[in-house]
Length: 248
Length: 384
Image (cartoon, rainbow over all chains, first blue to last red; front, side, top):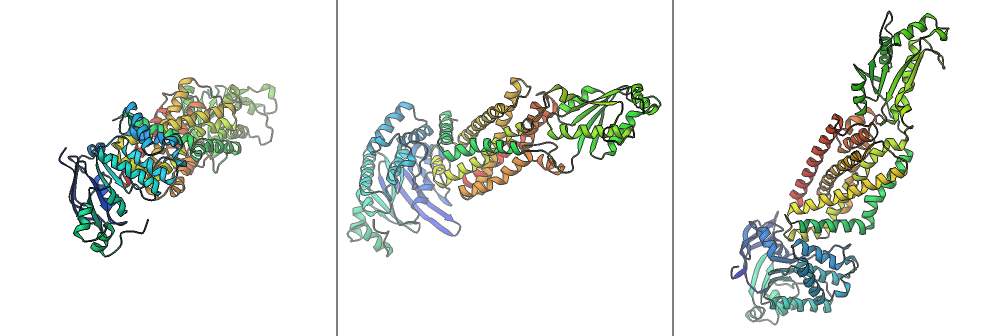
């Protein structure tokens, strides 16, 4: 594996006349927790979708773990875990069955799958709910289950697309702790969010994206100090002239 | 190819089928209830019927060629299409494959009998009686009901009689009805029932794919290393299993209701295999529907574009359909499945008979073609 886990070069994605991703260049180091920060519609999810091979870029390239996303998508999919923005779970399967399915799709052996499933349910506070059908879960529980589905196969690189959106503060902090644990395990993580405090709390570096363009890049502290402001929200206001999001 | 993935996806589909009440109803209960209700009210009939009749002429003519007179009289009815056979065996072969709906054996003393009648029309004790054997298509309700009176009327007509209860030396023996029990309406529609149940897979497949697309599950699966081949294989196997269970349930139901075809185990196995192959076309039609439909609700409605033609043109083949409908029916796969099952169960056709082999070839080619079209279209617009 190269020193940079993720290399994005001259990435452009157009949807007819709309430029969703506008010439983005970025490198994320192994073990780094990188935050993509921006308002809704800024292009964060489009970048994630390109990185995990769901959509093709109009131009440019992306290399994950040494594999070109376009040329070797299956190799990339074996390396990554993706927590998609939708709270997508099979409602007619129990939480444990959902997890087992995705473990099988990653061809995990049953013992490893069971051990990891138990550990992740424990960490996410879902152990007592494992045998309930996911359709009966609350929204926050489905989001936590969604995160488990993304990480059941212990991927080296994780893309977490707004994993805490619409979560209650307690669940959000549980997920934050979980993401910190992932970071401590040496995982490379790209976290998209429009929560400034989340980015400030968790990320080693942050890329602020607006209208598909990467308009700022650096650690939270550096971005704040360079712009002579109090927090990341002010950084965004200073750079774009508007607020990033509604209040939580 | 990782079979662990295929197996996991099959298990998921089976659990969905069992645990989702709407799916359970649509796949298993609805076809059974509908078939039961439809079967109970099904009465046959159709507009402008036309019947194909095979004739085996054993008549030894003398001064009067009665068989020729009989043949001309049959032709003049305008509703019979006549096919002359040189021997009974070839006529029976075509009857068992549904190529003709009846076979008449003109006996060797037919002309003698007519001469004896014309010589002394008022002295029945001096007539030479002859018996015409009539073999009927046991797979056609209409053939068994409509053809014997027509033949009887023609026989009456060639003796110059017009009375309601004629007196002549000809006796018409309906061989098939003598040999077996009188077929019920259920016997005639049972083969179509096996085909019918599987057709509703179109709706289920289209709903399943559009729902998974809407709720993000398709996206989630595409992020895993699951290949399109593994995914589609799991779907095809899942729906084939469901089709098999449907066919078994329909069989149990019609068996309880009294359907007892005189065939062996191999024919049953063969029939189930036909339904399995047929289910592939329904997966294909389901995928085509899912490609067109923007939402699962739209998929339900659009699926009827494929469900209805298959249902009405393909599940109750035979003379009960108008001739135009029969022609159109030949463009839907279900027609050939029902035709093959009717030939096997009711007409007693052998598995290796040409009509069955032709049906199987048509079903296999068309179903694989439709499945391929469905997979290609869906993959092109939504990616699997």
